[in-house]
Length: 221
Length: 218
Ligand SMILES: [Zn+2]
Image (cartoon, rainbow over all chains, first blue to last red; front, side, top):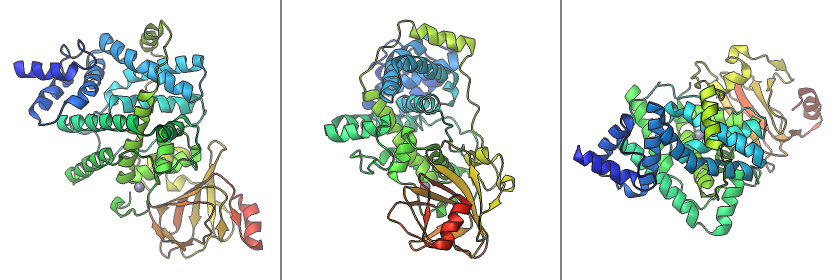
């Protein structure tokens, strides 16, 4: 029990010092398992705190945890929407809808497939297509093997860690290259203008998810 | 679905990035979503481009939200104003779920229209920056030689075709650009059924195909 508390505190203290220790249920279980893994936790700390907050929203309708997530993500969602061409008013309205969707769809979040930042981005992007571009968004179908078992803590930690590394790599790219990637995501480049060479160390997240898919297909046989 | 591990021709990085960014025309999005439904490799690659999008979003300078934004959002939640999107389905049959939702069913629901040369098509309704259609090419038949103005994506759903560059079977996607002139021929066996999107009208070489083009609206 003491070990678990220590682990939980260590995981929580980067961004949301008070948010994590009181959450029970899946988040605590996740952290307990992580405590047993030999995974370097530091770089994924704040991301695991986001995961715990999202689990608290999912399991307990925890408004304090939601407020933490809101404070951190809503201003960035609004910024992204404005850079994508939304007026401040539309961006504000849309941001509130995105954050409400986060609450409503919290049960669909899977930390072995996405970081919370990635997941919120996909919600914001879909809202942007709907509202700004007035189009349907065809989405890939779900995988045919039905709901998965409980996410593996080590996989979740690994993915959070790799996403953090991706974020840091983005921050250290040469200015010009980083601007190009940003313009692609803000819709300032047409698809034919997007160069394939991003300068980002892509491949780690892809191979992790690829492995998980292979393993699932194997388990289904 | 067909044996997925045999997919040889995949989506390009720029297409996956454009799909993740949400900046592609709807017609292209449909081809991308349909291919990803059939392809683990591109599904995993997309997860990475989504992650890049998340980090781009996080690296931007935050913009202050309205003072009462949190309470307004909680009120939205309490009123149940923002609907929960229904879970995506897994479709049975030849067409993956995203395509079925545009056709309103599987292969047997397609309303084919003959367009000449034994080829049939059904145009699917999307935004007008680009167009997308289902094509049925009888086994052994050639599609008229044509060049391209913009980008053309062709995803094989059944059967296979061969052109100057390679062989494309179920799940494979061909990404053609302006410089390409080709004559796809459907292989013997099953009729070849493709989902083809383009952001410009195709141009055919030669008089007969040009007439056919007018007639076919492609
Ligand atoms: Zn692929």
